[in-house]
Length: 341
Image (cartoon, rainbow, N blue to C red):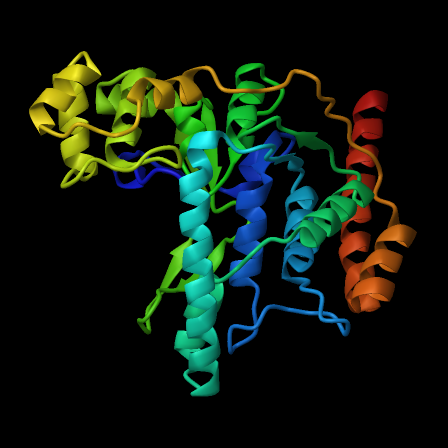
């Protein structure tokens, strides 16, 4: 879920083609949840194989990731490690919401209220250990690097970005900016039209770049104050301050040079230690022990895994892989032509 600072940020519309040749770090949990939420049947049920295993996330990984790779984007999937102890309450709340949504989904489905059923089904989405294992298996077979973060994946992405190991992070959330990611990209895997919940209205979803330095300049704050901003409106590690939205939070952090002064003005004494939350973002647990090495996709194993084990269409899988190989061959040919010119 992350922090809700989106309405304050400058977002630059981009074309996916502009990212050709770039190495992008993907917030894996965020993107996988996106796939299992969006890739569903009309009544909200996730895609499944004949054994009852959910395959929506595998569908997204195969077709949407190969689409990016066709365009020359080089994804690196970063997975969360052990969550910080302060995140426990947030995770418990999310589980409660998913359980309640699951019950509402079953009720709406029984009453044939398809739109309601789909909405609640998306809210009830869960990633199991088996689903994560399948996702990692497919990513490896596609020749894509995986980085295991010791804790928060978005913190790891920010560090890798600061080390120029990646060009930027890919996530629908904004937390990587609080962790210090120089560039964050949204809507990289979900471009197209999307129906607004509860309304017969469709909006265009386009790729966006959020540049940290440009935003700090526009907001007239530094990264420490950006973290204060997140703390005021709530993060995964703390409850929000009551009756404070993004705009008031921004005004407060612009006005004061200490968080204690902000607490004085709001007359709210948080039960959490704001310094501990600030420390999570400023000095997160990360690893430098990672390698970014790309390999050729293993077509035979991909087909066996997806088609034999999970009932994917062999023709569609082969077509996706063929497009990927065609693009790679074009790149090799281009390199050869440059060499001999």
